[in-house]
Structure formats: structure tokens, C-alpha cells
Length: 225
Image: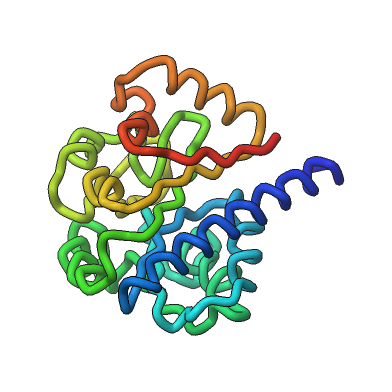
């Protein structure tokens, strides 16, 4: 990544962090606790780092993930580790972070326990920050997943997911649970993602490009080259 590109992506991260902080402040003025749902991957690291410096009553903020790989939290593949290292730091260190894993051997065995863990969060979420892959997936709603139809239609909060294109089994918030948020944001970078987004906007079959499942709600798109 060149210096200019890095600068532009930092600006995007700053703008998104400001928008999320304002959303949380707005809801905290009316309720005791609020919930932020975030996504993992490399794209949100700058956003996490900026958001962690915002002055908020973080002790009243719940944070959880849109999805997670079923790996140990010490693994470099863990979204929870990413969140702990880059977001639940600085001023945000007092936030309550609830991961989407348990000690069960598989997500199928653990989904009930994790559902119980997240029941007590401050639903509906104040904000959901989604990412998107080059295959149009968001959260762990993958076009080649055999559980995609279930994840798109289930009224349950969580779905265990296995996907041929991904090495690890996963757990994901259902589309229904992700829809139940006051605000939705999509945070993506790169020309390839812009191309995928344009293709997604030109059609409506969420099974081919699952990000389409979220075009039915107001979606604030944050993109940088």
C-alpha cells in the first residue's frame, strides 16, 4: 500500500469511527447500555484503533462480532484476538466484549451456548459494521456455504457455518439478527471491492452475493481505494 492510499484509508477509518461514536452517544443518552456489532479481517484495524481513542462511557458499551472462525482466541485467525488487540484498548478498554466462541469442539455443538452468551447484550444493536469479501460474502454468509439459506432465513440469532472455500468452520449472526440494528455500515477498501459492490447493486439474488441481503435496510457505505 502506498503512502497516499494509506492516508486515504486512514481518513475513511477516522470518519467511520466518528460516525459510530456519535451513534453510540445518541443511544446512550436514552438507554443504560448500547451494543456495537463489528466485523473482523484486516480492513477494520485502523477503524478499531481510532474508535478506541474516542471519549465515551465505554463501561456502558457492549461489543460483539458479526461472525467468528471456530478457532482458539489466541490464534492469529481469531477475530476476537483482533478486537482485543486493536479496539478494546485505550479509552475503550472498559467496554464489555463478548466473543462468539465457547469451549465446544465445533460451532454446531457450541451454538446454543454462544446464543445464551449474547442474549444478555443490549439488543437491538446501535450499529452493525459489516465488511465484504471479493465473493460478495458478509459476516459468514458465504455464497458457497450449505448453510447460507438457513443463515438468510433463520429467526435464531446464530448459525454454525461450514464453507468449502474456507479452511475453518465458523459461527455467524443470522441475517435476521444483523438486520435488527438501528444503523448499518459497510466498510470496504480497494477497487476490487467497489467492482463487487457495483455488481451486487445491479441485482437482487442474495444467494449469489450475500451482501445484497442488507440492501433492504439503509446502508451507509464507507469505501476508499
